[in-house]
Length: 169
Image (tube, rainbow, N blue to C red; front, side, top):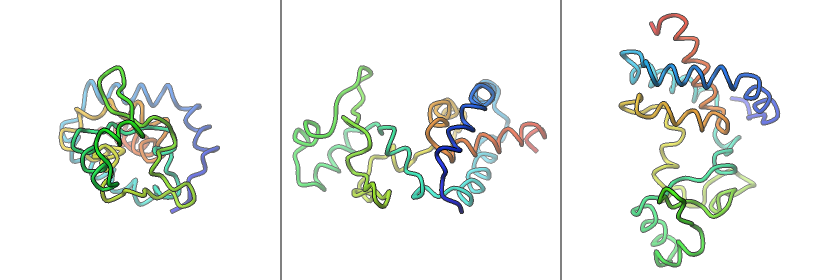
């Protein structure tokens, strides 16, 4: 596995943005019959190539959505009340989701790219980038946002495009 080169990744993304977003839209609108199975296989291939700890771009550029149970679990772990935790680290966005006040994530160690609350992290973080989900057709739209930040998502879409050209066989 090679470390992620963000300069190269950004150039690739800019050069292929329109095509890849278009492909994701097609995948969303007309998913193949065995999308869950195909996605799981492609997911395994992607993680042989991508090392999250060489990247952590999701933690540097994005915020997870915190559920009520995430907030309770993390605040207990940190020895804070829910109210203290929310006041210090989160804000309620216009859709009613609890999000990090700033990026990079306050729990990311920028020297190691490791999460300081890994065992207690939000469910959204634990599932990111959502490449291997049951009922993947309900998650495909998420990749339109994640592709810009996540090299694993980018690679997943590249591999899915290749499979689509061969009829997803």
